[in-house]
Length: 101
Image (cartoon, rainbow, N blue to C red):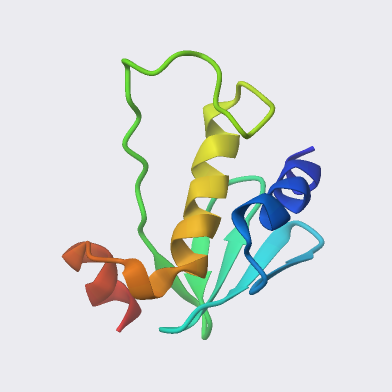
């Protein structure tokens, strides 16, 4: 289901540097290449290094996570990681930048 949701959302976000392979999203960023496991949300940089990108869940947010179609916060987390890494040149978080350099 998540694969279908990601596949549907990629064109909506204009992400042309993301492909899907079985249970992974393969991302070609400007700072590196990454994979996001669609079941767990685990992120690896090319070469096998795992990246720790932790979600910050908002309690004030409602139960609907548009445009993610389902109410599962894990789907929103995975889609957010894909968008973040697909546009990695815009990352400003020093913790994430230290990991991908």
